[in-house]
Length: 421
Image 1 (cartoon, rainbow, N blue to C red):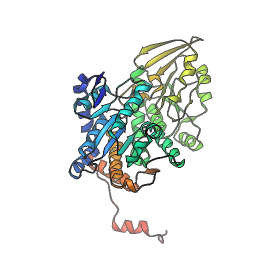
Image 2 (cartoon, one colour):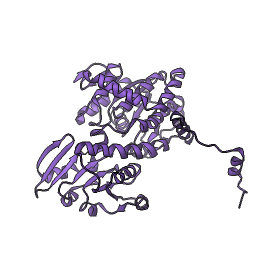
Image 3 (cartoon, helix red, strand yellow):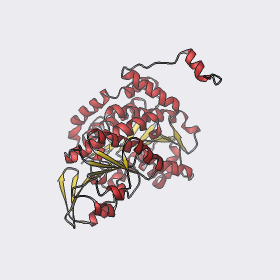
Image 4 (cartoon, rainbow, N blue to C red):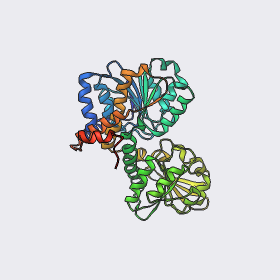
């Protein structure tokens, strides 16, 4: 472990490798690059101190350098014990950024790293899963007095924060970056779909074609995963608790059934719900020999690992991020990445191209809070439709894509409520 006043990382000697990855990501995030050019001149985050708690990946490094180019000062930790890319963390440390993150943290180390970021006395917070915000509220409420506002990256965190806001317990306003169309319709769907399969394949080298693939949850993430698994030749079954989501899955061509039924026929199981105990003891009791179980939701509670451990007579590692649980009835079940989000714990997370929009939204939300946050109530706010559309247009321009625009006659027709057949 390499430690100083400004960083706690696994191995500084990995910095060169991390720098190459960051350069790759930077070259594939044109929307954020365009915002950076403008921000370097206007300095919208001048004087702001940002505590960040978000997966330390090559894409996150590009976001961090963009924030500081806009005048902000960051202090960063990872938002999951198994998602930090150690070479990227080393590069950030070597470049002088305040970073406290490494792969394989235990729970105590995880929260100690968050605590280190709060020593910056933040004026803004950036979160993925709401662990930092909740830490402020539960342990350091006095530090919230200087916070103008915060942002939240993921579905699970937004749910937690909306509940806090409705209960009147939020100490400062938060912008739900996750709920932007340019985030969840792209990052959640296409990013999660591809990166989750990447993590499963890296951990198992399993052939997906012909397998029965169980997707628990048909939100944006589950829909993207189901689509990509079907594209690889898997027979996809969806489990759901929401009747509308279940109907969407049926209309999209998937079978839908209860998990209690799916466990008898599934070869691969992946949870994407944000809810605890989606797969529990009775489900393990009914799974086929060699079943593969993993999670792509933010927290590891979707799979009840203690239930699985209680049924095992032997546990051993097959390969990195692939543990075999040999059960008392001689069946073997494989758990990937200890139930942590498999796309980041066992792979590299979402591709840079799709994180470009998500992190552009994060950056714009921070700038909005810096300019207006002191006028907001202590509730959760959505990204504006105007920002969504402007970012989509910026992404298209950056990709060299042109679209049509309505003529003046078409605009008049659109607004003419008297026009009929």
